[in-house]
Length: 332
Image 1 (tube, rainbow, N blue to C red):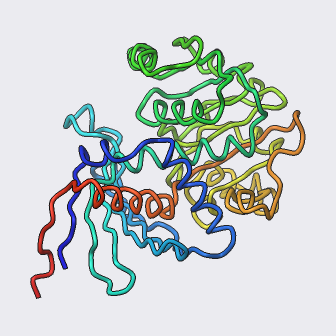
Image 2 (cartoon, helix red, strand yellow):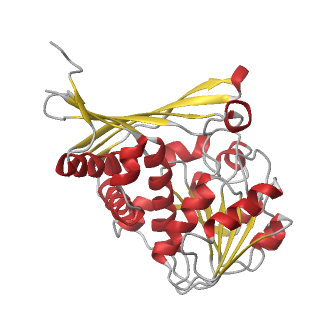
């Protein structure tokens, strides 16, 4: 058996955000119905390099997709080494034999499947026909999250973005205007101007201090918390959580690494304050938004099932299109 090797360029050509959204929604449904195995991600903290390495295994039983992903987070990479903050490699495993079917670049997959999770969450938790989006942070996820929301909501008219580095938010606006953005998009000077009055707020920063104040969040707002994906990270004033319907992607990951991890550790919120995980809602076991006025929060840590669902699609399409390179990894 030979192993298919797919580069990041291959993945870029193979996958569309639209199909990844569908795959991730299906993966959430499988998890909600009990057809997935996914232990919590494991961390190696590289304090002297201001980074971490994570391993993420998953098995989707309905589609026979098994993957293990190794992914990093090094916030200083771009400035110091000219490398992405997040990079990943994914191994797709044959469940019948345990042999590696494919080894593929996982950086693009990570960006797409994270955007897809935000889009799916907003589909179930945000008010329909929304017009205004506020984005905190202007990195990779700020870009893909917006593209994901635009797949779900065709009514978006205004996008406001803030970043600690004003140059980054200006570049974001210039780039996103070329990607079929609906309506207007502008860079703003502070976080308040980005989120006040927005019907959806996306936070996508590595912050360890709250950036979004409770006074700026109106009734009916939905918030996708993307940046807080490791212990100690947080982007929201905890008082927002206290007045919101909180939906996590996975309890075991979220309580120690998602947006709720700091308020939970301090006793500000408890497990009973969490309404649901997104998989239960997608599977129809719990309701999503039930009132136009409720504030909803989705805290995303990133799930290995999202990688498995997406990698399986990439592998099947690569075989069909004869892309990638096959190598003899086993030689036994």
